[in-house]
Structure formats: C-alpha cells, structure tokens
Image (cartoon, rainbow over all chains, first blue to last red; front, side):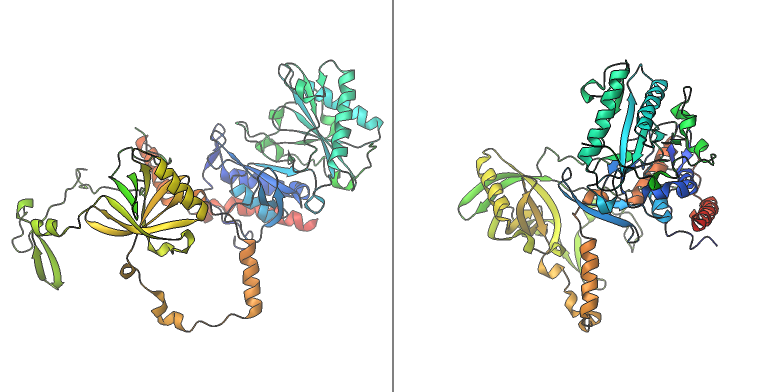
Amino acid sequence: MTEGLTRVKFTNLDKILYPELKITKAQIVEYYIKLAPKILSLLTDRPAVLNRFPDGVDKLGFYEKDAPLGTPSWVKVFKRYSETAERELAYILCNDLDTLVWLANLAALEIHVTLSQAESFESPDLVLIDIDPEPPAGFDDAIDAALLLKEKLDALSLHSYVKTSGMKGLHVVIPVSEGYAFRQTREFAHHIGQQLAKESEIIVSEFSKSRDPGTVFIDYLQNAHGRTMICPYSLRANPKATVSAPLDWRDAEKGLKPEDFTLFTVTKSEKNPWKKLLDDKQQLEVR
Amino acid sequence: MKVSKERMPRIPKRPIWTGSLTIGLVNVPVKLHAMTFDKGVSFRFLHKTDGQPLKYQRVCIREDKVVPWEETVKGYEVTKDQFIIFTKEELRAARPESDQRIRIDKFVDYLSVDPVFFERSYVLTPDGNSEPYALLMSTLQRLGKAGVGRITLRTKEYPVLVYAYKDALIVTTLRYAYEVADPSGLEELKQLPEPKKEELDLAIRIITDLSGEFRIEEYKDNYKEKIEQLMEKKLKGEIIVAEKPVKEEAKELMVALQETLKQLKQK
C-alpha cells in the first residue's frame, strides 16, 4: 500500500540528527512532509543551497550548491556557471514533494534559497532585510528594530513579511515585481537601514559596525546575485531544532523567542502568515 | 579503546626500494614508497566456545600430521596431483636479480594506457639530488606523457608506468598482456546491434547531462562504515539491535505523505 506514494528510497531513518533532543531522520522527513504545502510555493523554481548534516548537528555539516552525485533523474536542476566555484553548478530546484522528501532524506536540514527565481536569476523578486542583533543586544532588540522597520515600510505603502531566522535574528522580506536589479534592491535595503540607524541608538547600517557589542545590524548585503536566505519553515542546524518561522506581524512582540519555533511546535500551527507573499509583488521607489 | 576511523593514509617514511630511474644514459636516483592501502574490514577467526584466536597449520594429507617448516618444499602442479618439486635454493637462484633500476624504454601519452592493466601504485621520492627528479616530473606534467619500463620488486619483474600525479612521480605496476583477457572473443558481444540514430542522440544527451568531474571522495564503503558503527557500539558495551526493515520504519511517513498529497491536490 505504501508503494507509489514517493519515488524516494529512504535510508538510515533511525539515525539521530539532533542528539540533544534525540530527533531521528524519520522525524525530520516527517516534518518536511507535513510542512510541504506551506514550503513548496516558496521553494519552487528557486535555486536551493543545502546545508547537510549527515552525521547530526553536533558534527560538521557541509554546504552543497551542486546537485550531488546520485541525484535522481526526476529532480529538476538549474545549471549555471558559478564564479565562486569557477565551474558550472547544477542547482537543485525543489519543485515538488518528492524532491523535498529526497532532500530531507539527504539530511539537508537547512535549505537556503536565492532571492530570485531561476528563470530571471539576475533579477530579484524578493528584497531581504536581515536583522541581526549582536550581544548583549538580543531577540527583543531585534523585534524592536523589526517593528521600527515595518513602520518605515508602511509609510512607503510597502507590505512586508517577517520571519525568525531560527538563529538569533529576524528576516523581513518585501516581494517586488519584475525588472529590478540586485544593485537596486540592495541600495533600497541599505538606504532604509541608514534611515533607521539615524532614529535608533542601537541600530547600525554598516557592515563595519555590525560586530560592535549591543548593536542591531540591518543587513542589506544578501541582496546580491547568487546569495541566499534560509527558506521559510526550514529547520536550522542548532541543538534546539529551531525553525525559520514566518510570523504574523501582530504576533511579533517582545518576549518572543527563537526557541518558541521548533520542529515540534511549528507543525502544530495552522497559520500560514506568508501565504500571499508571492502574489503581493510591489514596486519599489529606487534611484 | 577506539575504532580506527577513516582518514587519509600517510605515506610511510621508509622506502621499500631504493635505486634509480634510468632513461638511456640518464639516471634519476629515487626511493619507492607504498601509497595504496587496502582499508576493508578484516576479521579473525575465533573459537566460538572460548573466544580464542585460531591459528593455521600445514597438515600433511597422507599422515594427517602437522609438518614443520624445515620439511616443506614448493611443488608446481603439472596436472592434478602431479608435482614438479623446486627447492628453496633452486627458486632463489632463478629469481630475477633486482638491479635497482627502473628502466624506461619509451614514453607514451599518459591517457593512452587502458586502466585494465593497472595493478598497484607507488610514489617515488628523490634520493639525494632532487634536480633530475624535478626536471623529469615537470616535463612529464607538461607533456602529459608517461614512461613505460620495467622494475623488479622482490621476486617479480613488472612492466610499469611512470608519470606525474599531484607534483610527484608515481610508478604503477602493470599486468602483462597475458594476464588480461580479451573481451572481443565473447560470443555475446559478436553480434551487437547498431543503435538507431535517434536513440544514440538521446543517449548522448542523457550522458552529457550527467557528466561531471571525477571525484573519488564521493564514494565510500557502506559495509565498512556499518561494521565500524557496530564496533563502536560493541566497545561501549551496548546491545546491538538489528535494524528494522525500512518498510515498517517508514510506515508513519507514508501516513504523512498521504495526508500531504491530499492537501496538495486540493490546491
């Protein structure tokens, strides 16, 4: 009865990949299966970069841009010359449930995606503003900065979407219509960061200040060709099995913690705050 | 106690052979080191009842008695149960003398030698003066050529290939022509059909799509890894539980899959 549901051949399902919580690969595969209806639209046609942990999160993982040897023929790939790798890479396009399940079985705990789609690789359809607190600044400070940022974007009549990074910060994303260059979205994000930095004691907008203790860096630098963002609902490779969890802006308030969103809790939520993201393409005012 | 883990083998300092590479009148003094190692899992036989290791003995078939080394000779089986006897002295006298040379007869394109002939590889290092070594290595690198010649290692003379690999000179011993079978005599291969053009085009496309760099690191011995994991558990005194068959394990996943597929269809 089970045949025919998936083309994936499962391996080592018993293997524990999060030792502290004793989470097995079977649980990870199950997580991605359950979240597939929310994740797939965000993964579709977006070159994926995997962060794989075949021996668990306490052991060294590795980033993988190139479809690994043994990639089944039904997995779609996007071939492109990479300047950093100095060769043509076949990026995986996770366009269907089987591919997602296959990635989970590869122990690709973290799935990162580009901010543009394969067909228009040079032209972003998402602007990412990464809010990154530097201790002693914490998650509450990141929330404060995100709310300030939202006010700014609201004033420009721009809808924005927020998620936890799953590590210590927050990601704010603005979907944009076709035709922008990364240079433009990057300048836009940088400009917004500079304005926020003027209004707040702890917000910084320049990379050189990003490691100053107690600051919150408004990171615009991911808005570049080939750069990636952790996919919404992707697991993170940390001991607590946190998730990069999309939030309703109304729920983004102080007291929230990245550890509130884990493999165990996220599956229980019916909410899908980013559901409209890709139908909400907007114009930016850029120079 | 720890189970020894996968790591790159190291080239032993001690050479197994010292001599020179000779090309006509030119001599390149070299040392030869082992560089390939069999890393499979190996077991010893034990006595099941007391766990003690077993030893092998030579037992005479007729007398059913253990024969000491001094009473042994080597025999070549001419036909079944008929032997020609060689004494150790006779064999020693017939041994090819190792003249401590790797004689290079000619140079060929490195890629023109078929891998079916490769046997075992050794790395050469300069013995004393490294200039001739460096010169030969750089030249072979630049031309993509390999020297073909002979070496005598212990009791056997081998044909060899000498070439550059990762800035080192490598000697790979080769099999003799009579040690490798010729597949063209096989009946099944004599009447292969001619592929149709469109099939060929399709196959070419598939192979081109799957083409990539050769990366040996991507392969590993799964059996060996599994045995090593079991060993680690055993060393810790854990009880080994036989793994569940995949199907049963995956049952819950199939339930989840069914549910998700249903949801995706509704979209």
